[in-house]
Length: 114
Image (cartoon, rainbow, N blue to C red; front, side):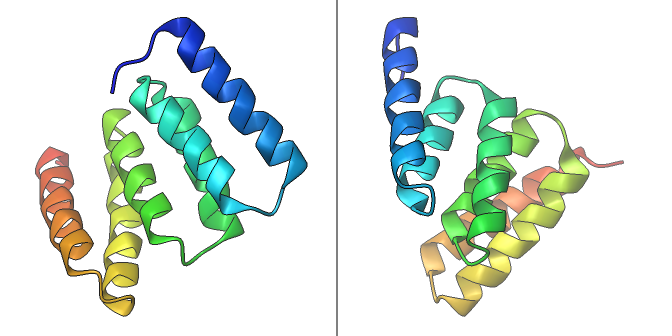
């Protein structure tokens, strides 16, 4: 999805306000990270998903998107570790499609490592 700068700013502002209003809710933080990711703001996406992973350690999709952000930043060692956590969570939560995606993603990440 492609956003114009004004749309990105509006979405970021809206999700930041929601996070301030409901600081323990995962969804606005996830949506903020997704907005950053979709806008190509991978550093901000990664840090947002990292906070969410710390806040809710079983939030599998936060690990998946953090992995993708780390890979976009060429931080492959961290991406591999995060992806392995996503794989473990996908197995524990019986999410076969996410598991398949993460296994493919892990292979892609490992192909970038020396």
